[in-house]
Image (cartoon, rainbow, N blue to C red):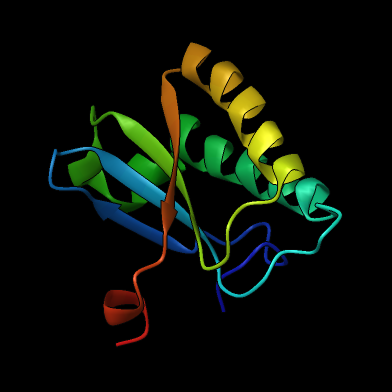
Length: 113
């Protein structure tokens, strides 16, 4: 099951249409009003960055070697300010390591099919 509670598990990995390695953190369902998931998201993102930057991604998926890396936060409900603020701050740090962070609302026709 994808989600923030499985910090050491990559929810979804693919090559996007632009040829980038796309690692998606999937958060189906609502967020808490207080943004309490920030700690879970921080831990999950740390695992994703380690996977992408320390060789595990290329070891498991050799076709992604030398591809730019994007970590995407895919969600159902709009992001609370606490989550959005954390993701923007983390994006600045990740970009210094060569990783771009992005967000995308889940599309019911694709995700739930």
